[in-house]
Picture 1 (cartoon, rainbow, N blue to C red):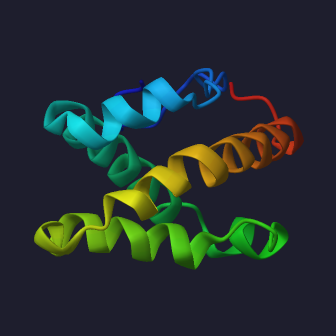
Picture 2: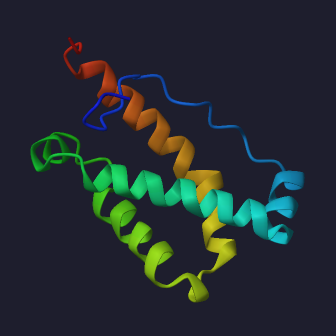
Length: 111
């Protein structure tokens, strides 16, 4: 990370394939739920900081939904539907990762 808080690495962590065991663990372990909530909040915050121009260049990314979901996680934590969260982890996060990796490949190298 640079002094101004920007991420310098363009390599994203691996998004593992969800398994039935992972789903059971997620749905029964509050620590895992909190950990995943935090990471989904970070994804939403990062999406909110993507410029409007870059968002417009990549309309296939569900920017508004990602940002809106972050707001739900932060402000309505007693109303969170963990089945819905699991579906996002299982289906949407891997797709988003692929989209972001594609976007990163189109950006000019950092100096």
